[in-house]
Every structure is written in structure tokens, then in C-alpha cells.
Image (tube, rainbow, N blue to C red; front, side, top):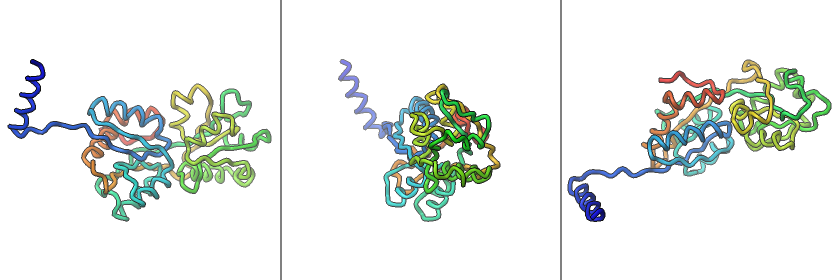
Length: 257
């Protein structure tokens, strides 16, 4: 009986020309500082819409190069808004989709068992006990460039540069310190506040005026075959719910609408 009802329902939909909504999956290239915040946002988005999201985390510069080479991403969330702007200039992203979704922050972070006093601020990096300092690779990671700028501002860079170990992205830099492969690191505040790390270490927030602002931007990739779904996700990030999650992870987010 139930099977007959289902057959009739499908027949009626076909006869009336009604469209059946089919869940889509979009692929998002996201800066690694979004690792924890975006997993939470995606969970809420999928629950609300029924659509699916595949998250790929990495360094913003690498994603920029991959999109130039035709990587099949639908959305690109960069830790440096300059990269999405370049894609627009190159005709590879939709101009009207550009959105500055947050401003990031950096912190000095050590494991809880460490004897290093991060309350000393950047002078803590001068401790002779430190063998390795983890940062993201400044060649393609905005958080790495911010870390170098902050060290230069406090005039410690020349002293410690030979002790730097470079992560492919800021998440990997955080993993170096968390695992003990480095003694201290300059990482994203969003990672330091994440449940997975907040109980494992302590941090000192680096003043924002000591480095260029980490203005983070998103854009829909022009070659996307799921532009409508990508726009829907972007709107969810802009919503009160999305902004609240971003703010909880330490991002300076735009005012909720």
C-alpha cells in the first residue's frame, strides 16, 4: 500500500511539473584558522538546509594558486582578503560575492606544562631555553606574515629567526607546539580558543597595532557549478547565527544583520 502511495506521489509531481529539491554538496577552500569555527558553522548549516559541505583546510596562498590552476572549489575563505580580490581581478571569482567575513588575531601560545611565561609578551621568545618557535610559513600564510611583522615590531625577530620552524599553515604551526615539536608558537586566537586546545595551553594576545590587520575575505569561485548553494552558505555565515559562532572563536566579525 505504501509503495502504491509513493508511486502515485511521484506521478503527481511529474504531472504537475513540480520540482523535487535535491540536496547539493559544495566544496569550500578555507583558511586553516577557521578549522574549529567552520566545523561548527557547517554542522548548523547542514542541519538547517539539508545541503552538504566538504571542507578543505589549508593556507590561503596555496588555495589561491590552486584556484588559478582550476581546482574545483565552490567557495574560497581566505585569511587575507587580498587573495579573493586578485581572483576577481583575474576573472576567476564573482565580483558581487566578495565579503569581508572577519578580522583575525594572533597570540603567543605555550602548552600548560611549559615553564615559559607568556605573560612577558614577545620578550618570552628571548628565553634561552627555547629551541624552536612555530609560526605559519609567511610565504603563503597570512598568519605567518603577521607573526613576522609582530616580532619585527618588538625587535626580537633578528634574535630568534634561526629558531623558527614553519608550518604549512597556522593549524600545523599550532600542532607543532601542542605536540612538543616546538616550545612556543605564534598562532591564531581562533585555534587557542577552540575546545581542543583551550584546555591544553595558555596564551598572550599580541596587540593588533603591531602587525598589518588580518582582514579575511570570502568569494564564490566563478567556475562553480553550484553557485546558488555557495551563495546560500555565504549568507548563512553572514547571519546572526554564523556571526555569533565566529565571534565566540575570537574573530572580529561584522555586525549581525
